[in-house]
Length: 241
Image 1 (cartoon, rainbow, N blue to C red):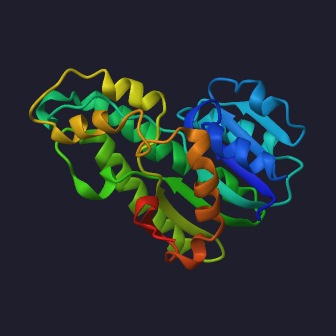
Image 2 (tube, one colour):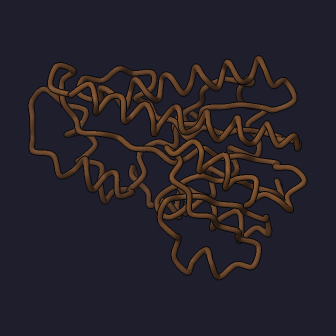
Image 3 (cartoon, rainbow, N blue to C red):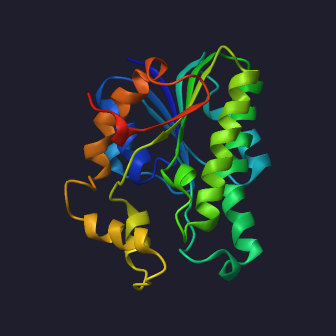
């Protein structure tokens, strides 16, 4: 198992779940997010945290080297932090909202990756937490789908530039996070049937909690090189074994 892990967005949701799972398995985890995580993570001696606004490039470039000052290399980097935006048709979404999603879901990750590679230590694999929205183009998902598709392409480009690092975009499936609180709060709209399907799966086995998906997700990440070529995309729901 990987021993040194860097995760963005560790204060809640999938990032928090992954950090806890890796820590429980004995790994050292460096985490960043705007909000500080709760005692679940801070109770581990091998957890190191820095509050960082990932959309603030100068702050990222200043704080990451400090956080990782005693790190000689990272086995796994998980780019998890992101935002979704409201479900609506494209003409209903202001351009500023789309730009904001791209800043959070794409360019913030570029800033993180550039900072990590600039530090010069080895990075074994980079996992971008993606979504089925990146490849399905369902109506209503607008900027979220565009940004996840762009991030998937960016991973492919980095894979061609950094052959010693394995890159993959991983869709974890439906996970019951605060994002689902937001999505399930949308009023019913016949235009967005995928949203109604999502709502129907909440509180069922088809939408596990972050702590339930963390174990299977870590196992997938740890064996990703045998599942997909560097720069590729995989959906955990497609895995049969």
